[in-house]
Length: 510
Ligand code: HEC
Ligand code: HEC
Image (cartoon, rainbow, N blue to C red; front, side, top):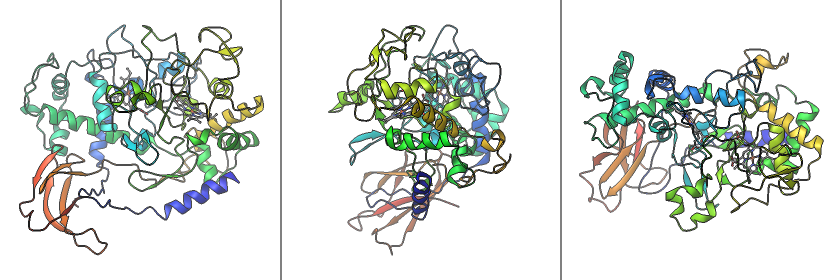
């Protein structure tokens, strides 16, 4: 039943996957393709410990590309979860930084499927914030995110962008690829490994930093992070069956427990209009009432999530966002313990039991209490905006909880290799291997009549075009073609004024 419904939705939406251009002054059009060299540069940067202060940590340290050892086990898990393997193995809620003794304050989320989170935005129809990266969405997209860990004192701890560029200069492959991909010469920039953030960097540093973060983000858009090879994917495609516990679990997940209201189990549409298989997140923000985790080193202050961001707090209604964290995808969730923004839950059974009984079990004082999750739960760390409509009292039986966990375990990628399923032998490609992975969109901002700012995928040639109408039969005239070497590139239309209104778009030039 449910499978048929999911598939029907998937099929009906794929036929609609046409690109619609919004009818406003600024029109953006996107046809970015992968540049393999750029993905390769991103892969090198992602795994390079030289980009951390003590040359001991890279993105891959906390978002590993290889399977972690299982919790308390010396056996590796079946597939990478793109989280901190030390956290998985030892249930430590947070990660060590490059500087000895420094720890972050939050649980490292998976980079898997992160490319599908839309740009952070306010959805006026639903009246809620959607998308972005980080538990509180403070990075609008993957490029903006990738620039932050390098400079975070509790993570890679580089003192400044200039210092980072100095490290990039050391590497001849980087020197070559930055020149080839972005027309940037690393040799032209004077090095200063100790430059602090208050030193004014020489020209070129910011462009190199932007290009580096873009390359990392392109690697994170590689299909290896978004494989769609779980048992559930093959089940959706009709290539295998779920066992009765998994099927019951799917049904409870969607219907009785209502998990799918936030962890979407239907096919969807990405920001660029492409159909996606279920991503198990609608990328919105909620306070599901996680208790405080007293095991976090350094006992950091309460994390207020979305509403704790100064920019959100300053908006009218900012307090209605306090305590809300991003709904994370549940793909690969079985290989990414511990759980929640503060890692307070060590296993999936606990998470499901929490959703089921948060408001009905008794109270214990903290998560170190032996009765944690058995006789009671500690109170929610942030009492404001607690979601009580969909979470807290679900009336699930013990069997139904176990079934939901069995279902969650079908979301782990690599099923052909690990499933020992004759109908899906090793090497079977994903039934959704052609799913488009959202790319960096081109953006045109009109700042004054005839004055535009172009942003998009650095290193790509764009043709900026104009039209005097947005009717279906209109004709787009070329204004200019340019290789985008820095964002917010100013473009002038000297013929503006001839007509009352002009529409623009940027297309990737072949
Ligand atoms: C010391 C561990 C550590 C390192 C090193 C690290 N991260 Fe993270 N990463 C985290 C933590 C912790 C968070 C969550 C922080 C938050 O939400 O405020 C995070 C969040 C993210 C997210 C957001 C995912 C989501 O679903 O919101 C992405 C993407 C990411 N990191 C990529 C990277 C990249 C790229 C690098 C290297 C440039 C990197 N990380 C380096 C620990 C780390
Ligand atoms: C109201 C929306 C909502 C509903 C309903 C919901 N979740 Fe969540 N889920 C979230 C949010 C938000 C988070 C992150 C919470 C945090 O860290 O503070 C989350 C986190 C999780 C995590 C931890 C993921 C990780 O990688 O750390 C799991 C597992 C999970 N949910 C499973 C479920 C299941 C199973 C159900 C149904 C029983 C469910 N959720 C219902 C919003 C929801």
